[in-house]
Image (tube, rainbow, N blue to C red):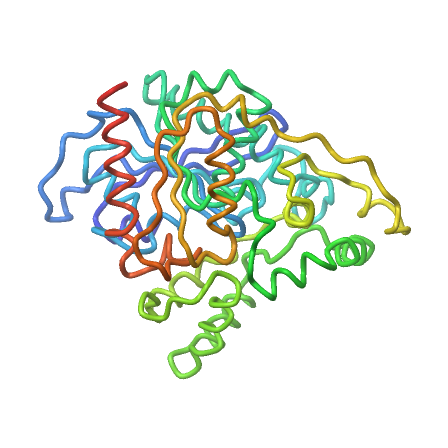
Length: 374
């Protein structure tokens, strides 16, 4: 919220309660403040836009690049009522009506399945109740897309509450990922999860002063090479588009926390190539050779609304063929955008110097088109 206020925009914090008792912070940017020095725009002339972030991140995904570049600001400047969600377990949604995240392991017994089943519907309903609109636009990045398809698979009635989805680097299929570090972790995920669980770990990479300090040291201007190389391995390499200052700002907000089970669920869909529900066998048994029956697939055919897919050719997390596989399987594919920069990576979608031109202006154009038609 400090970032948004700093740049001369209003910001509201709404607390939303899910069916299973989690308390989520939902941020709203209703427009510019008078003190910003910018001419005011007529707000709410369009249906509201809901933005959902990626794994280990938060709504900071949409505002880090600042006005004129960040998608949240571009939307607000175009007169949209912008709402940014925060999934359970992140730094802004680490709350529950009964469970203490620092003391109760039950708080962390969720994957991105529950985020799609409970969090996203609760936040969508809140936005519609507050604004009085019947439908909204949905924009998701990476995990923010997969939880949307979980929601429609399990609660298809939400097709009637969403106009369109802008699926940015959709992490529904990820089995062709290229990052060596992530691939190594995925390969040994069952053993790692079992070991961490038995040691009392339930949360992964929470927001802490220790991690923030470590990131600032490791990515200081005199030692930014380490940070860059780590980013290149995980997300892909595109040196001209990495701004060292913005990278350090990003690491002031990332990682924002997740559950161990959430990351384990990711490893399962990567290893199997199946967009499926969570299989709990490996975390519950000492014998990791036990073969569980395959968990059920999510039903992509229930996503009936228009789907617009965006992908990069150098994305190490969501390979372009994985993004195109999703595009082939949804029943109402509206458009597919290949980012023109051939080196565009997974992190470039929210951090690249050319992201506004390569991506955000296209997203804005698509939303405007569907808004007029609706």
